[in-house]
Image (tube, rainbow, N blue to C red; front, top):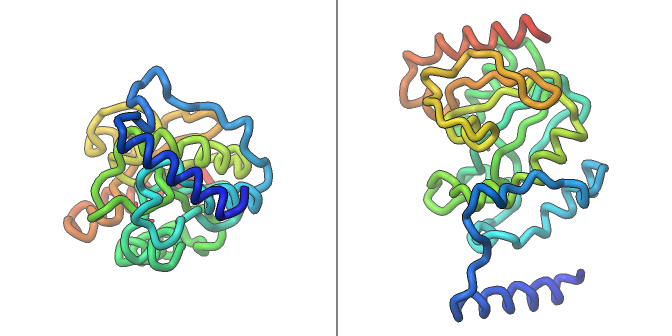
Length: 219
Ligand code: URA
């Protein structure tokens, strides 16, 4: 579709919504696991995602934050969604929380940031950094699933409660589940605290350090 066609389609969708149609029914039954129609190549997938207008987050974004890193990585980090710095740059985890994540990767895991893959539950910034809705996460899910399928990591670290909840549909508080080793498709899933939480609560850093040592042991 050309950009003009996309804009026309988008305008039509907004018109439908203005007269009362809903974009999408928020229903767990409709949870989208299907990603068969997605490209199998990361670059093509990225081009598809860059042109996504399927949820309302497209309206406020400056850039789509697709994700970045080694597409053959054994270790994948999944955050919640882009913040202001990520939206401005189009890259995941580049703000303050991102700098802390980079330190964790380099100093605790003794890896380079380029060795791992970093993505988010939603690819566009929620307004005022609010938590993505179930609907937004669900619409973005096939993109993340396809990224995971292409990378096929052996370990996935879910950063924070939103990432953990939307990945697993499990509402257990992150403080109870962090550091556990769970199975997620072909990979081990280790939830831990989000780096933004660590910036507000430095006393929790020791827990994340412990979780990352577990990840290091598995690598
Ligand atoms: N927080 C996230 O969850 N993801 C980012 O990319 C940046 C901050």
